[in-house]
Image (cartoon, rainbow, N blue to C red; front, side, top):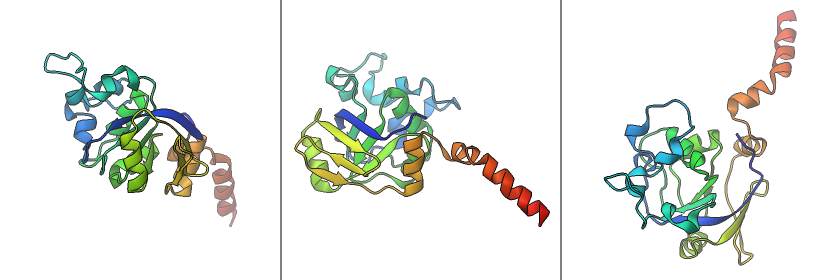
Length: 193
């Protein structure tokens, strides 16, 4: 995983409430155990028409969305079934953070474990973001803050261990493997006791 310390990006707004994981990555694309290539299927039923052609009216297909790494979504993002493929598809597409007033718990946990930052903001900040698609915002992971172009800063909750992992580009297994010498020393001490 690539470390996240500060994200500075224009936002892309998908102002739809209750976006579930089957809309993020439809079940027919869950045939892989790797994350590479899933971005091309992100929001497939919304991004593409019946013949497979991109829908010009879908926000992620529009030129102004190119290069955006922060998705501002409606309330209750990531609800539905548990699938790691959903954050995999978002990150493979190039998104690094999702901002909403509510992010489903299971999706949020999967996102944190897979290098996608879920940012929960208050309704006023969210409303401003929804009304200003394409605004350049800054997310500071160390400060756990999102700064609007107006200078207003909103803080967001994030548990310390998840923050540490994201800032250092490691998942839980990577964290443990980084402590291998300490674990071996502990086991050696216990074996002598």
